[in-house]
Length: 522
Image 1 (cartoon, rainbow, N blue to C red):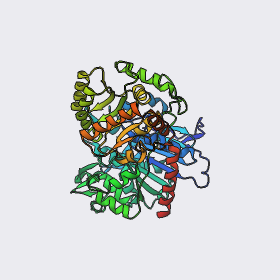
Image 2 (image 1 turned 90 degrees about the vertical axis):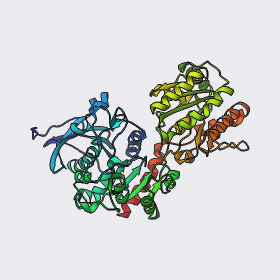
Image 3 (image 1 turned 60 degrees about the horizontal axis):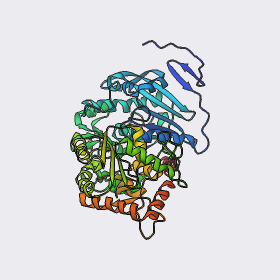
């Protein structure tokens, strides 16, 4: 590919020189940082889960507080759809050392605001595919090469774009290798990284990037990195472990989950290194926020009526529309329980399925479920709904409109998770005056204040502890009883939840403190 050597003025206050777009940035204000955020996905460009939401909201919140944030992610042209129109090439020939040769990639960009730019690594052999990580339920067989390449390309992109980061913030196993690279001779002594501290956020410890030890070859690192103190994991390489051992600071997405992952029960065989980092004061739990502009019952365009803590009348309109949308009879006095979830072992929906039949037979309540995932659970939920067509309805798949309708029209929102690092839906539910019914684990423990019939001045939802059908069934019946017989307590619980501050601005402030500590530590 020929790159024209020219200088051209453009609308973005930049010039193109030797195949690259060089932005003219104003100097950072005192106390603000140059941050590189590394992720495998970010909304709205490409999303499979909560990581994409975090990679949209937290960089934005940080940029609005004056920090300059560069988000680097793969370019997925088949997945991005209409968002392909937003991006443009900013660097045409990015050399990436990989597999004993130099591969050539491009960098594309989308500037969101003067302090926030998304950069996309374009390499079609690895990322021009119909989905991010798997196809028809089967993981891509070359995921190790794909994300090892991406990590190396991201480090090269930082150099090519002339970024000198104060913070390199990696997320999950897909980008954890960048923390290893930063400490390696390949990059540590380069001027761009001379004062760079690294942070690794663990969103879901169950996914670790474990591959055959021969795949160390793709990293370009020597066998001295195949040790218990770095990448070695039961005679394999573990990319997440490498990040855990080398990042200057680690975070996970709630304070309770930070304590859970240092235990054998929820440490997924990484509890020992996590305990080691925790003892050194390098592990913190920082609760995720939510997009309070998107999830706002006073201005939400996806719901039929608006409401607020001071005026909840619109919620009844949403409930009626919810029942209609799921073809359930309109019964205003029957409590409606909502669920929006992935059908996975983690989410405890198998326990819900075992508990719910008894309640559907004997109780005046309705359940609406929006879910996809495990085919067996899909079929079982659909089977239960077919047995009780006036009390339960299931929509397989995902719809943003239905998700907002469930949050706004439901009387309760059910999350019986086995483990939940943070959880977002319980926070959405509280915003919409829909008290969550949750198992006390991870972020659910941190965000929901259990109902107290003697003093509900602070209550925001309902908790249970033992994950079994009987415990869940008893809790569901308890909440239905509160709905019918303790209207004042139920209403106050709604209002309390709606007044909670789950904004990303609050979370961003906690990350600022972490970044300062990370920089001081190097």
